[in-house]
Amino acid sequence: MKKKYILFLCIIITLSILSLMTACSKDSDPVSPDTSTKTDTLSVGVIIPMTGSGPLLKDPEIAAIDLALQDVNQYLAEQGTGKYIHAEIRDSKFSALDIQDALEFFNENNIKIIVFSGTSANLQSVENYVNNNNMLLINQTSTSAELSQEDNIFRLVPDDNYLANAMAQSMVQQSVNKSVVLYRGDVWGCGLAESFESAFIALGGSILEKIGYDPRYTTTELEDALNRSNTLVENAISSGDADNVAMTCLCFEEGIELLKLSADKSSLDKMSWYSSDGMAQNQALLVDSTAASFAAKVGFFSPIMAENYTTAGQTISNRIEEQIGYTPYSWAVVLYDAFWTAALTRIDDNYSYDINDIKSVFLSVLENYDAVSGDIILNDNGDRASSPYDFWQVIGSNDAYQWTKAFTFQGE
Image 1 (cartoon, rainbow, N blue to C red):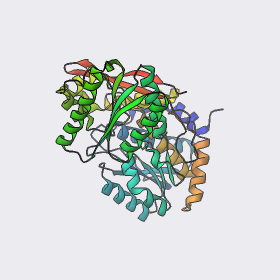
Image 2 (image 1 turned 90 degrees about the horizontal axis):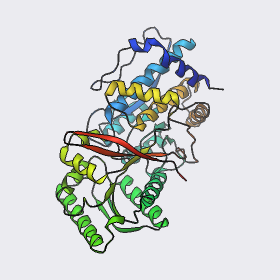
Image 3 (image 1 turned 180 degrees about the horizontal axis):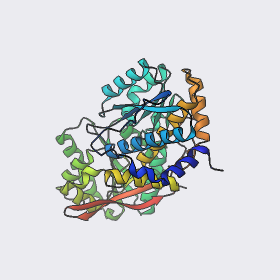
Image 4 (image 1 turned 180 degrees about the vertical axis):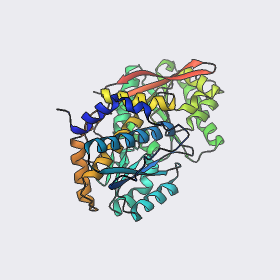
């Protein structure tokens, strides 16, 4: 039998009243409905990227929080609970300092349940603060395996060991048995490069070389890394291995610059490129004609957690797309789930500030919540246990480039 939360959600999705609600435009903040008639307002902290430069997509995340907030409070009103969820939203700006400031504000105001969309490096910078101040943090974008541990942080995505396996198996299935690995030298990039190397070698592949670059990179450093990669590929071509070699590029938004610089190299367009979830469905890439043209030529297969949605989840994705004008990445739908589970935990936590009580309520909520992003089963470290992966690629020509789903890796 459907759980009460998702049953209500499926009903309200079909209600025509939603068409009368004022949508949050992609350039505006999420809208918080009026609370003047509510008898019991409960706050949930939210940290999402709204400005600044980084690998996460702002528009779908703003829209996901906006819709989740609407739907949660519609549910509470229909149930006659007399309760109302307030989203205390802070802009991460992709800045560790701004994220820290937001958490300090939440802590000072006894907001102990936080939905946080940020990178693994961002999460690593605040994990001690979260744990030391008895806060519960729900994340849907950090994937570093190094951060997979039993604590107060729950990640509704699998760690990068699963992504590395999906990448390695997919490449081998496409007859790739050698790869240059170019990677971002932070906690995410280093960890994913190591996990990919292990998975690829276990399947009979070999790594020609791993080439890291500082996340505070200069153009000269990226050029040097690409020149080294180009030499390795030229050597492989001269040895007759060109058809079996691929570039593995583990990057964030600097991938656009890497692709642009690669267009001038003699051999880097003679093989397939694979990237990762740090670049999947990046919209800025599509409007850079040089980078997009090169990506379309080499494939640039970029995996991200699959759109393994329920019927309600597909509807949520469609509603987000109506607001932002393009298909949202899957993390936006997971963010919708993250807010719902945070809100339901706050509603059921009996006003406790004891972290053990809050965690117990959260795990109970999750067990009884039918996630729109697909089943959420956590492992012992509080991360999603597994997921299929969609591999996206850039296609098109001239000024008409788009991301298209190339294939889905279902797992072993």
